[in-house]
Image (tube, rainbow, N blue to C red; front, side, top):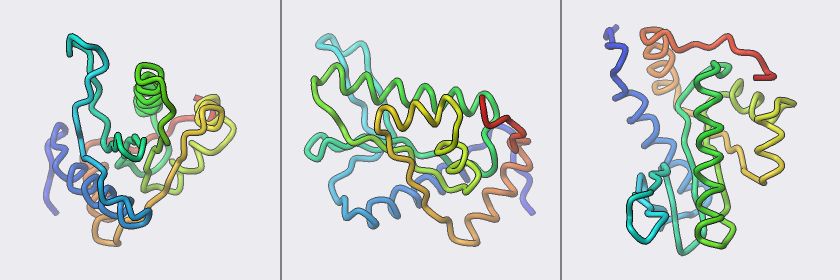
Length: 158
């Protein structure tokens, strides 16, 4: 097995691309931009970079390449993603369909459960969409996470 450096995110990037393609195919979204820069002010000094976006279809989303329960830092990442998407609504004076795409049953359960984070997602109508990875990519992600020591033992209420 290949040993990954702690900072190496190439596997997660590969899986994110796979999840993006699968999400687009599932919903027949052929005009989603991947990793665009969206400026939020006229001076173009404030911007966000969601994992996918379509101004035409009013869609914005984030993709999480993680297995297992979320650690506190990963829950904070989800919270930051929520803020980013809500800020886009506010600044553009519209409502986007917002997604968080996951590839883990545990993360999906956690984000649809009874935590304050899950309640926030429900309250702001942010969809949690689980896409199943191929067996090969699933094993690759598991191995990468073991090498990066990213398996979380976080709590549901975090």
